[in-house]
Image 1 (cartoon, one colour):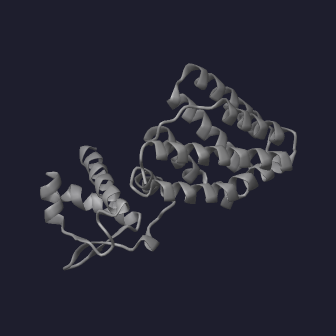
Image 2: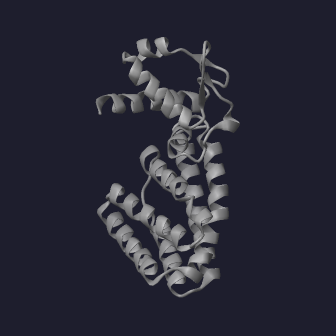
Length: 234
């Protein structure tokens, strides 16, 4: 268990370096050098490399070493890669990517949910909004995040389109990154937009659901961009 935890830590340090550009494509790392730098066993280093290989950001080459791959090969939808992007110097660019994706996927999910959501799903959406309101009043960001992720997860699944629902991990990673990596405080306006989506889905109003979701995405983009600029991240 300890080795697995250490391997995860090493992979996160190296992944952040790669995604930030500190280790550009073509950079070669050697296992013995990583062993020495992190003070870990070879088994830990190998496991860390396997974790990075699974994200396609490095490739092990016999007699050469561990090679950083081109960005076009990376699994950019991975929550880990999204976190590394959001914590690095390309945050503004990545926020734009995320907003473009969300503006395409989530209004569609809301529209489909208004047509296809089950009674249980509509009830769960309403409960999630209630949870967000309570957590915001208590200034409990972790609890707010939990309800926010729950809302978007249920909504995406309520589309009853597996391809749309497959974006759950991306949206969850973005919400986690916004909460943990940037100055963040829940806004009543944003909660109101979530309430409007839930009400529209329950009322089977596809157009209203999509419109309210577009407001959520726009507000999130503006808030994340503002937080990034306040932190001086360029």
